[in-house]
Image (cartoon, rainbow over all chains, first blue to last red; front, side, top):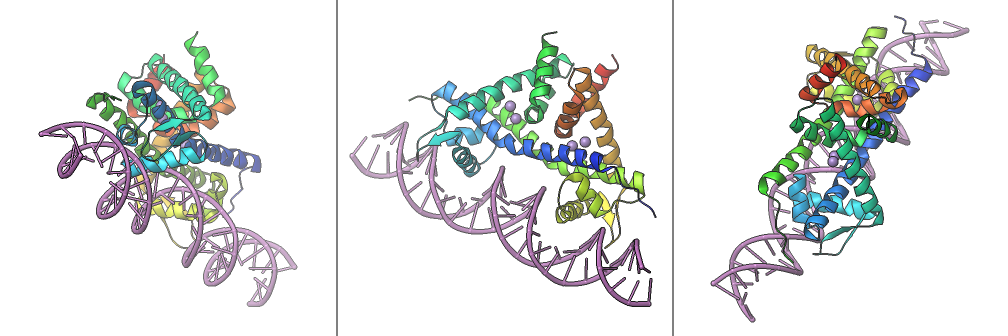
Length: 143
Length: 143
DNA sequence: GCCAAATTGTAGCCTTGGCTCTATCTTCTG
DNA sequence: CAGAAGATAGAGCCAAGGCTACAATTTGGC
Ligand SMILES: [Mn+2]
Ligand SMILES: [Mn+2]
Ligand SMILES: [Mn+2]
Ligand SMILES: [Mn+2]
């Protein structure tokens, strides 16, 4: 049975798209946690592990591990038994993520997606919205 | 330092959104592989591990492991050194995923997203598009 | 038909991100 | 101001999904 292969360029392009999606996915945890820590610091002056875990829907050791990764990547700082705080880089990420989240939700709402579905779906979709797509979303909302 | 907690209902709702996103993410691998296996069977009459790995942009042991999960979940069948084929459930998933992928791309294009960005971003976003959001997308495209 | 090349399988390693269980530290309350 | 309650830390388990290295099987060219 012959199997004429796809053109290499097409196959490579498709592989690149999947690779890109995997890379974007690896940012999800960092993005969601930085935004939430920023939320908590704004609301309470600090972000406690217990509150982070509660809001993320995970156990506290899971939240601790996530914060360890944030610290390792230079996005947050903390001292034992004290709250978690964002670095400048962390604050920049939080601001960017918050703005993008809002735009994604607004686009979904503008397209007629019910509010509850828009919030739920945006929480996952946002991490795959590139700068080019975000720019198009903003232009569409300003139309 | 006082820290008035968020209302429990809001916190629970937010936790649910994150949990939902994590669950959706866990479907990504199954969805992308079933669609690709279906592509390959249509094009070549069979889906070989090497071709799957090449198109997914992973090594062949990674593709083998993914296929093992598909088999475990009743979405595919295969015999050693023979190709991989979808079950009825696998075919149903592939059809659903392919249709959803197209709609997501079409919506992005309709919003003015450049074609290359639309294809790349859709590959990740699609897995977080709920039935309600998909229905709204279809209605929007038929506008 | 044989043999080399291609393909597939398998073992084992790593990181991420969940979890439970236990220990330690801090905070609050009587 | 002690003791209980609450919060944090840490050890260790697991599954998913990447990888490399090596073994076995199949395929194709001569
Ligand atoms: Mn999110
Ligand atoms: Mn978000
Ligand atoms: Mn995809
Ligand atoms: Mn797709």
